[in-house]
Length: 417
Image (tube, rainbow, N blue to C red; front, side, top):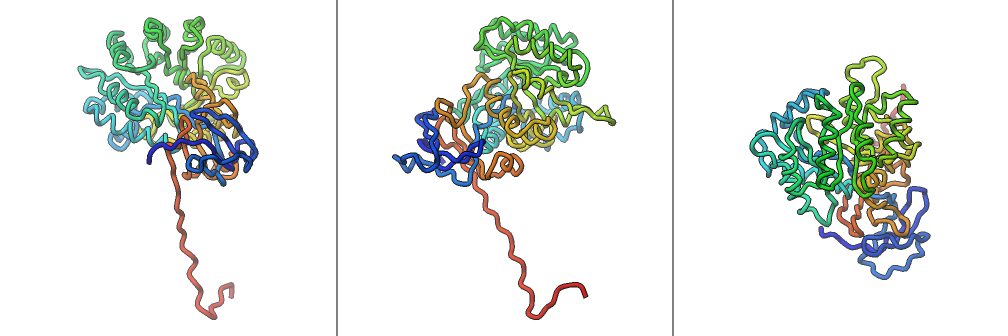
């Protein structure tokens, strides 16, 4: 299908239960009217959403498209972060740029058809004499999917990679600096080094931060360094599992510093629930960041799917409704907060304008078959219509067929004798 411009969404059920007509001009919502009152001026660009719930489109603030869909090829060990890293490093030595591109393309389209219209993906800079295979593959993918999904790319070097090679990846078209400083021998020095690379280039930074239940915590050093950065520059802390282990008084101090520094925190429930806590067979911790405390304090918070069927997570449907369900069940958030974290919370982390059925908001939506937000999160119907920049960019329909009960022979009595 081709992307189809939309000027009117009719009979849409909104998150608050209202049924409305939503008018769109270009990539912006211009009006929200009671259902049935909008005048249809162009039937071809009007979409009937009777029986659908209209949600702000999902945004994925922390993907690994270059790793996605490799679980079956690698057959890695279960539930071990360090061995997962080692198994992927061994596997990636044999990958070509096209190998990476093809899987990343498939993974991105899975996200898109499920309702995600903005993706931030970390991209491994590979060790050895061909470090930029993944970088070049993902830059090509970003160009090829322009107009369908907004794709932002983050450099992810292995611990200890030299500055020159990292900057070479940024020269080839990546958008943000990144890394995993908590894995380094001196985590605080690694934070300073990676942020300095971003600072030299005038770009933002997205770090894998404190992805463990104990050990060193780099969040405060990160906040101290970027506190005086200009407002427009991205500064993101992904995972941040360690925050969920802190006593209340210490946590409050750290959260205040994150807010002052403008750092967005990204929770990644499926991967962290899978990887964290395996050394605690009794009273196993959930392995999530301090979601409720961050939200209540007014921090910038989003959530994403992270790894999809790779050595770091054998599962994953590339569906923000899956992440939202985990936030309800494991994160103890309500339905509205859960969808907010995977949509406008994630967009805020990515420094993108909000999407919603309100005048002036970005026309980024996913309409899901269902009667309410609760039903949509619970059942995650595959029947969806995805709208990006005021255009329908994906449609999914479902055909259910169930056999009728076989007729009973005449005169046959069924029951207890």
